[in-house]
Amino acid sequence: MDAIDRKILSLLQEDGRLSMTDLAARIGVSLSTCHRRVRELETSGAIEKYRAVVSPAALGLTFEAIVFITLARTDTETVTAFETAAISIPNVVEAERLFGEPDFVLRVLAHDLESYQELYDGTLGSLPGVQRMVSTLVMKRLHDDRVIPI
Image 1 (cartoon, rainbow, N blue to C red):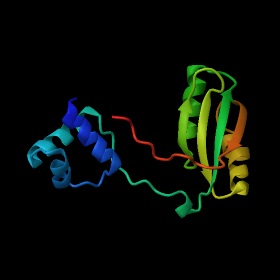
Image 2 (spheres, rainbow, N blue to C red; image 1 turned 30 degrees about the horizontal axis):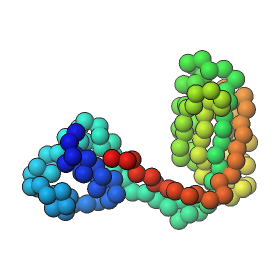
Image 3 (cartoon, rainbow, N blue to C red; image 1 turned 30 degrees about the vertical axis):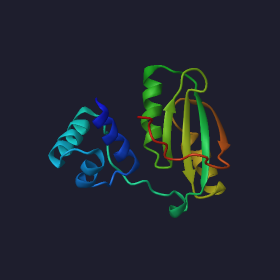
Image 4 (cartoon, one colour; image 1 turned 45 degrees about the vertical axis):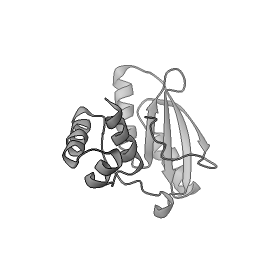
């Protein structure tokens, strides 16, 4: 990966809707060179996907919680069952497996406290292998949609 590839990644990360013409002009390469390089970055996996970033508030999802989960057992079967179930929940918008305790951290969006409580008591509480759940409410998001330093 050279400086041109890094510039392509940087610009597309800031605005994934840039046309190939605009991208080529900003980088200072021909349209065909730009198109070929973008395809190579996509094929190599450097560009994973393109998407729109949707405002949770626009959908009424103004309640956000971080949930720390400790499993009773961390054998492969339990962990796999938990991971599969957790990522199938639409309100779980981020999920990370951690070293040490807790075993997982989930970012959960809900409409309000009542809907979060139902999700917490029902869906999250019944995930495979859950021993303990601790949640904290997000007061304020300081930095959202962080770009990868290139």
